[in-house]
Length: 219
Ligand code: AMP
Image (tube, rainbow, N blue to C red; front, side):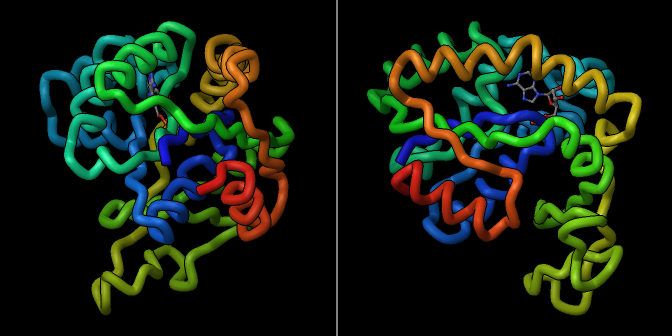
């Protein structure tokens, strides 16, 4: 199964991709996570990406493509993947086509997580992530059972404190939504025209979104 998840920041792409990964063993390939990891490790690439990420702008296409190409080339992605956050503009969609043609792995579907834009602000300001296992929570709608700490049983008694992403602060959120509307949303028509687009109503409780996601994607 080779999927692309499309949707505004805060539409739940990461949450749904993690769930599909856990239930079906398909790797989640998140460009945002790959970039945050590069920034945290202080790699040359991470240092070049940081300023754009802090401002809610897109990182240059060549930096992200390098990360995605390397990740999709790893053995676990040979049997399928869920791309989360990539592509983010038309040039990236074309680059992805070229990489997948080289790997002889065409996409099966592109799933749009459709949400009411007014709900996004709250979803983003409430988002909290575990710095160790990456599990995503929402302080308002899907809090951790352990409050400020991660409730994933893998941590045992040593549950890490959840973090808010720097770019989930209010001033940056506005710009990220603007960038999505201007640069990423044209991909909806791009993939619809190619017959790949499936739409999920992501303004529902998480379990219902997941059920619809599995159904439309055929995963
Ligand atoms: P995300 O976790 O998907 O919300 O991404 C966080 C930030 O990483 C974005 O606001 C961008 O600065 C950067 N980023 C993630 N994916 C891409 C991409 N495909 N192209 C360019 N920048 C990206």
